[in-house]
Length: 315
Image (cartoon, rainbow, N blue to C red; front, side, top):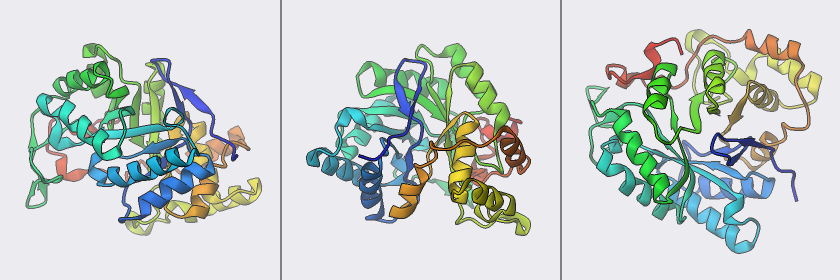
């Protein structure tokens, strides 16, 4: 059996595996195979979302692995997310139930509010006019009350948020009956999020790091080098006898986060989990941190007019 990732304790006493498989941007068929490869490679943490349009495939792959006896349901940590078009309170519980039906599960281990702002309701995931998102003023505090109801009903073991800034988290913590266990944010050497990570740590909120490899498929601005081509990181990979991706994932882990790298390649899926058999020196962590550019791969700028847009503040 392959070695499993260590676990991190959440503020409600539950454990989350310290590395997971991200599943965004997959073509049909890719996710099913990726999830099965990941389970075989020792992953016990799968991250998906309604807006990824692949929950059914993720569910099929998990059911296949359960039936094989490769893994039990209680051994796999499954995360999904409430999309922006479903923030109206009366939509939250039914939307979570639809996610469970698509995943073919009785519960998710973690259910997140995907973004703090809400979109116009309807069948369009991205309602827009002239490239600008059609947002509504639904308050995420009202949405959160129904996220708590998902826990009360046994639909979600834990709840959290994604893409919330420090002010939004503070406001939520003041109002919440059930405290968020996670803030899932973009985090990589070009956007190391140290201030927000520290803020969350002080409040016993674990940070999950999405796009920890800075999405190599996206072109960098002003001719900048894609993260995995950075010469400094290549030198460190040689020093530690690891791939550049493994060095980056180890760095993001050592920042105090749970990375969820996305891959649909069997070899890379296997490589990405092998980051717990070495440690970067403090000097090397400091050097990698100097690469920070506050460069955000996913600014979601089409919603920046919303009063709940999270990236106007420093962190």
